[in-house]
Length: 119
Image (cartoon, one colour):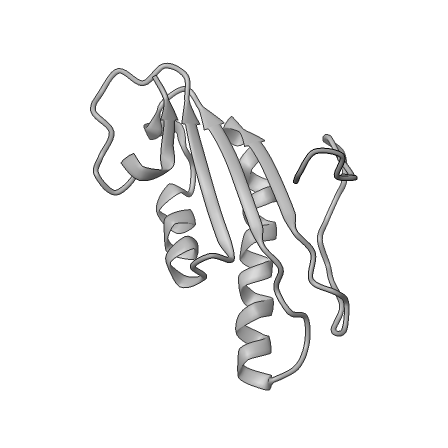
């Protein structure tokens, strides 16, 4: 987003992302804390599946960009972190993630270091 961009926010409750073939690509920003990653991780997997289907069939939904911001106390509490890194590697420039930790005491592993901010 840039200054003066219009955004839609949804906090809690029932929500989903189910684009249809021919829908315009959208830029998604997903924000999660702790176990709140569960529904957002499902959305990431769905987007990856749609993209794989589109590449195989040559039609369908074209993926926009997805930026995930995910916070937890420490890296051991970041659920699905290896899967999220795998999605970023599979869809470079399309899926990105920034992890934020608030109470990290141990050294952060090299694989996560470029994607982690916080203490």
